[in-house]
Image 1 (cartoon, rainbow, N blue to C red):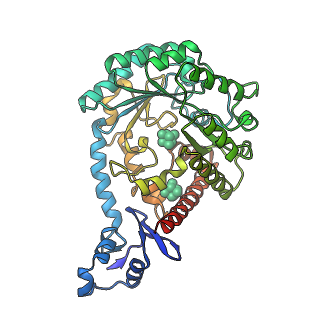
Image 2 (cartoon, rainbow, N blue to C red):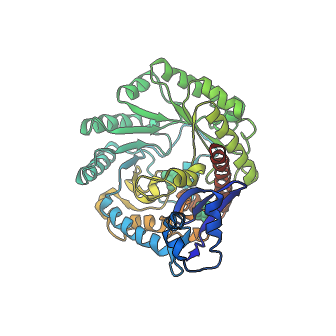
Image 3 (cartoon, rainbow, N blue to C red):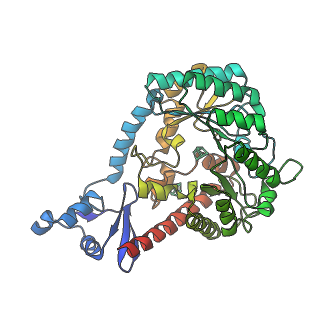
Length: 452
Ligand code: SF4
Ligand code: SF4
């Protein structure tokens, strides 16, 4: 037996957190376990006593100790092959992202969608979806759900600003509710086009709204701006009030941080959000732009840790793609396939105004068109190939990274944009994810030590 080359140890004096880079399996190890593990620093046979030892069998089960000739990557390859078979036919899909609009009413320089789509022509020229395309997309998707007997599916309207195409958006929601009254519908909107009538419509149809506010006025108004550079803070707050007034308040919002609003987004702002009654805040840094993001990895990690601490102290949840690897390891995933997002494992299908198909609303890797929807999910199709390449253990970009099996290849649009623009944002973000995950582990280890 030998110690796995993928074993990772985060150590403090009275205990260590260990996991396997490929397999996951996070455990807190007391010194007795650590000493047993260290006794295998040179490969050796188990003694008769060790063959009966529960400590040794737990270390083997966790893939910390492995047989000398075991190639652990082969285990993931086998798992991934099985997974990709289940992606064929769209069997894993449970979310449709309908891009009813590829244009926006404001002009944030850090816009993910605009920056991503602009690096490639795959989204085409049509900027607003017409009703026949929306209707056909909904029919194709709901038929797919019926084929696989799925009832728990979601339709999400997002990407640029869906409310710009109100007529098609409203018609789609009504149509979807007719097909399945229990359907989950979500809209990602900047809120600025919402009025009383639209707000009431969302409430009546139980449409979940998610939105962004990039800090207090001084911070938000530096980056979340209209085309004339005017800030949106006051207008967004008025929409918060409008929704609260009709009895449909938002439960949270997202914050994107870059160099410009960095100093304004702090624990006081989080406290303000908590006092307003918000229940959760998503925090993230820019996933693709290098514009206004020249601070160091450590600056950003410390900032996000500060905001996370403030959220938790205020009794709010804190989310963000930067915590993905940590959550994959600590909480695991129901389907045992830890990826950066659900799109990367074949749970999503996204359709734009041209009827073009992508794994999510922001990526620009073209995977098909509704004219040949079924073909999209054929074996070896561009859709299946992309998912297969991205599965943890298959992604060559990630070999030898200490969080390979749990980070699983970062956001697809980061990779696409970095490749096209050569802005190296992918490399910055890899360092950022590794550092952030390490800090989160350290925090967890300290908590475990206190508990013990
Ligand atoms: S941090 Fe980068 S190299 Fe490491 S697993 Fe994530 S995407 Fe891959
Ligand atoms: S690839 Fe995944 S993480 Fe990236 S924008 Fe799409 S859904 Fe979000």
